[in-house]
Length: 240
Length: 286
Image (cartoon, rainbow over all chains, first blue to last red):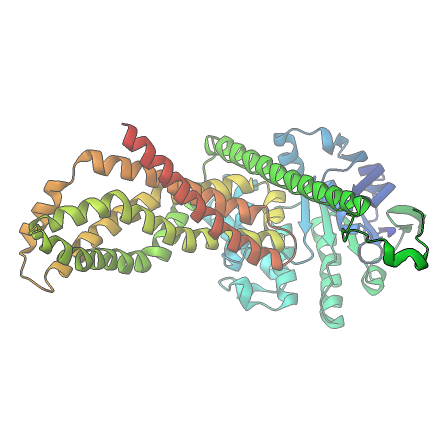
């Protein structure tokens, strides 16, 4: 697995304070060690690219960050708080600051695009009026270039469109950290490029820090400024 | 073992007995023991997982933030999904029961007891059990497949990271909807069953509707109706819980969605029959 830190040149003043810190993280499934003593830091305004071949534990890493999986060893600190020590309420508050783009898009099949976008918005940004919700939904859909799909079902969308809607659902709650799990997997090169561009636009517009998990070198190349590598769940190289 | 000289072999008659291979048998035995131990481990871990799921469902049922809209949506879904099937089944139960019972009762000159007999058997047993088994097939498999596919496509994870408790949103609403809707569906099937019975009685006779209904209701007491409704509440809870459990704990592959749906139907049908057995025993004791 490869880990790459990239710092966008678009941010002239970047606060070098780290907002996410992973220290000696280990996770095994039975006898299979997926993460082995992995350490990394995500600085404010930075994009961290994690590169590695399939099955090397990249997705496990970001799932540990939002505690969808519990690590066996090590600590994960988000905004200075240890994720594993958080109470249910604390975890909920922490997750509100993190956007997670799933590999499959994970759009809710039984809901329209609009309902998919409203779902996290109504739960995280409580107290918004109907007008404000509609405006926000339209704004994020326009940002991903899919303003006309409002009342479509996810099954009516193409793979690239699903990824865009999923990205819109993630950014609608204004997260501070974005976690991208294989954002270009299963897409053709043109759509992959479009998604990569979109990720850059989201970063610039919403001022997010990101961890991008990918095995697609081309996707990683689109945003590189700093990087580090690791193999079989262990960090083996870090650099720009 | 000492070898016999071939020259003397004809004078010696050895018994034709096959000695058991003790070592091989011991290995086979230990293999079986390990297999049984593994099966027992799987069984008890699954049982533990189910009780943990049950506990979490109860805990989330009484939490402050109840997903009322989703609960109503699920109630509608359950009713909408099963209503046509239940309607047909209800009428057919009453019709068949009447057509088959009539000749036997006629032999004893007790045809006048037909409405009462059919009504009691529909309300006490046929209506609740047949309706619950149909719901187990229709609703249980639907819940298993729906939640299973949500699990496979990471929709449950997506819900969790969106600060939504999936147990509260997906499981509690479905279990409560099934618990509420199945008794209602059973009462509806009972009513259609009695209607079907009246239609059956009119195939070979002319029975006025009011007379048939009054005779049927005269035979039914609250002691017939209440235990029957009470057990359907448990049927509903069991179908909802098993369907959701199987879907929620499905594996990661698409194959597991099919497995979840199938095992949800099988297990919830089994639960319905077992609950019925217990309910009958309790009613009998009272």
